[in-house]
Amino acid sequence: ETGVTQSPTHLIKTRGQQVTLRCSSQSGHNTVSWYQQALGQGPQFIFQYYREEENGRGNFPPRFSGLQFPNYSSELNVNALELDDSALYLCASGRVEGNTIYFGEGSWLTVV
Amino acid sequence: GENVEQHPSTLSVQEGDSAVIKCTYSDSASNYFPWYKQELGKGPQLIIDIRSNVGEKKDQRIAVTLNKTAKHFSLHITETQPEDSAVYFCAATIDLNTGNQFYFGTGTSLTVIP
Image: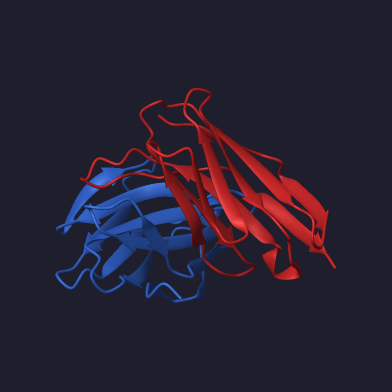
């Protein structure tokens, strides 16, 4: 167990809706990253947060947004959901001074 | 940006045999290479990592080797056991001490046959 917890574990949304996924970082960690993992693929970097600001972003449109809170918990928000957004969304925490990131169990999102 | 390729996509071995998974990367600035194991329905779990100033690292039955010149690194699992069955991902990143983006391979599904 990594100490990174995510909620909800599974959810189903309709195309065009909005979704918020939540993550609680491992104690002592100060960065949080979000990754999208499509079925049969490796995780793809969405963005990273440090000191409550976005600290790097992958090739994802602006409808993917996030927040990091003072207690280092985080949210991933996705607006105007598309069918291709169906995936496992992974939160990972770490320390900016170190390399390693540790993943939570993920939130499975299905868009219908 | 960085491009990580991973081979093979599937691998079946008999229990007790060794398994080797190979990855290549494109950006010579990458300097940290972790390996993750992902079991069905779970998130990726870090199993071993290596930094670019080291050529090999071993942890019990698991070892990782890195060839910076050729830009490839490999995961070696010896004396495989059924519980080693999972999907394995390699990754590469540039450690900047300011946060970093990890680039993952497409995964190797390892099946250990009892």
